[in-house]
Image (cartoon, rainbow, N blue to C red; front, side):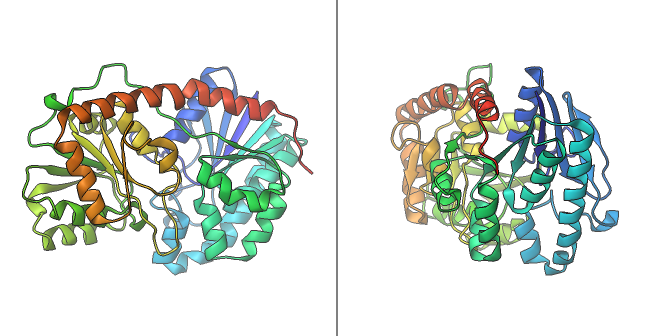
Length: 395
């Protein structure tokens, strides 16, 4: 099967940590003998690449120094912080559609898989039509629907039109509910993304770092709720712990100032972007992983929470807020701890894990088993292949 993935961003080098689940999906599909291409925007003039048997075709949409609409942060975040970048959007859309059409005519794909219908639906449709009506499949993450509804209402009409021309996939039940009003009764498959299960067994809680390490991994943007995590930890400052924050983003400087104001600077380490090996080491020494997702000013929140799956795959007990697709991953009290989006509730949840080593061990083991059984890549690729081969209803 010849497959094209149409995406907003793709790893720029082997150590780039963006969209790791998409890179793994393409790699797994390639390992099964499929021919897999990726259409992604350029970043500062970056050209075509090949990685793990996958061909990445990058389209240019502006002079190299301006090609920063994607990759460093999401497009809505970039436009909110730097509105001047909106001038690049028409060129981005036009260049993406043109590149998709050329690629479709050249490669004649069997399936075009679009990620984030806003803004890539038109490009995906062009590639499918140019391929002589390849199957069009779209994965929705939730953020694009919220953006369309809150910030650009005309996009809602586009979503209704587009959903009638694609097979539909949601990464979580909450995302499926968001798509339903635009789907016109069409089937929506829920297929999350997964993580590989580490071969080496995880360390037991009592073998991990002393004092206990609390870990956060993710982009430093408002919806991740790291400021609320700091507020929560200030409530349990009388006990031993250290917080490691892995990731980068526009909120880093404000978060460091917030930690300083709370008197936590000597106990919070902002590690920034780390290598794959260092990230594995961080998971292995963590006593507790926390994803304090919240709603940002666009009412955006966590679509699924792949970092939770990563932590659980290492047997790390997790604490997370009841937001978005997180509830599809964490079974409260069995594979992790779910709390309300509130610093006091977060503090209580974290404390309940750190105070009870036996409970932490049980949560970690159950979480690892859930990742193996529900979020293994073999199962996920099987389910996507079934969607690819299903009869299309495209009009």
